[in-house]
Length: 141
Image (cartoon, rainbow, N blue to C red; front, top):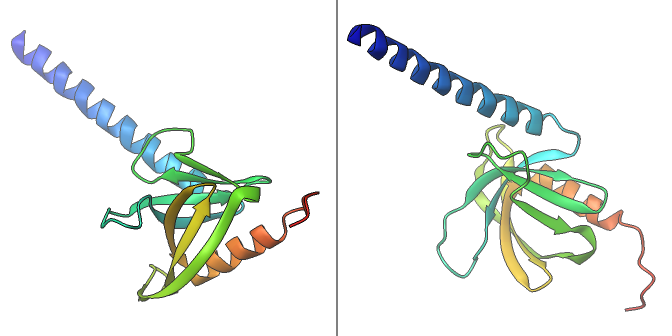
């Protein structure tokens, strides 16, 4: 009887692990296949040596949304409004992504928040195009 209970417990644990892995892989695949999605790392505090957090970003109509790679959350971890996002500076890095494309570090500002994005050169070109394609606002600068 005890052996049966232990076996059922181990089986339930293995089933739970398999389900979590399936959910994780399904989430990553779904995010990466969305139109306008690209791999992007975020560092919230550029002044410190904080670690980069890997994720997937996606262009929306009015905002750029970003999901953490190591998460099961269906909601994005960060959202930046297109009209309030400013690219301050970019600098090339001595590294490439998995496809061999050169990488950039992009310094950004959203309202008063300053952060950095690390992305491939083609992803950066897409980001710049997305920002420049925004509808004009009615305000005069």
